[in-house]
Image 1 (cartoon, one colour):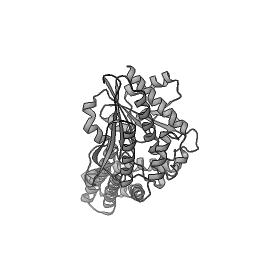
Image 2: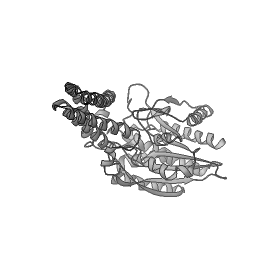
Image 3: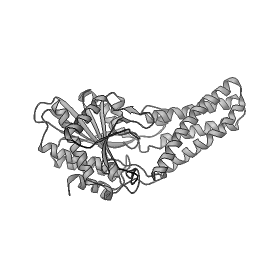
Image 4: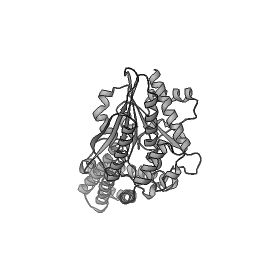
Length: 389
């Protein structure tokens, strides 16, 4: 069995679900740390940081605030209730948008952050260092709420999230207008907002009680590919490109591991450093993302797309360009103006269209060795393009 498959089996079967900030993800980090040392990687280390254990609690607080505001505006009589409804809906919208953009907000300040750590290593080139690349994959896995259980549920939940955001913005504007103009009858608008906000609140509250996915594809596959690539780089070092290997925790709860790494290392790595996030690469057709983000879609840096397209052409590989559906560890780098690229695989056709995304079915048996090999080869080709510039 190849090293990537051995790694994926250990993470998904021996350890299993690896929730952010949990002992299981800590065990995964210790395992990867050991593999890096066995491969002879330089500067193998743990880097501690404080991360979030849940991706749903900030959204739960946002929806709760909006629901309370709409209820007050609907059931109360007077301008004060409308004003409170506007403020609470505004707070909900702020928290929801800021959380999706990794920006500070009130709900995040109320949530306790827990200690955890990234795993890092460096592979030095044969000659003088003139370029740097960071290749990353996340160790943690997501919970398995019902709205990830099928493609239909995913579309429905996406519509619900959009409707809930619109309802919060509507509540902010309408209730504020009612309070300013003394139009208390506008409180009845709350009756139309409460179902969206209440249902979204119930969905995210229930999500935190579901088990963690085994995460073979998402994202033991990315971890396995990087460790396989590390072995190849030790045997065939690049000429002038220093490769940093990064295995993060808390990607699933807001890319906290990548954010911590950037806070500590982005300046020393330089603005020309390329960040490559390898995420869900065990099932389907190899792709790279044209944009990244949960609500707002941020375009992939032109330099990253140029390198990917050159690698695709020079390597003669079939690699697709697709828009992103959520966020990856590349997004914090993109938001800071850094050169960042995400690689993933997407199944062809309707069968397995979700690639077992955030499901208990994301087990070792779903992994396609060919997809892993193609991802490793394409990443290698991207490194050759960087090294040859």
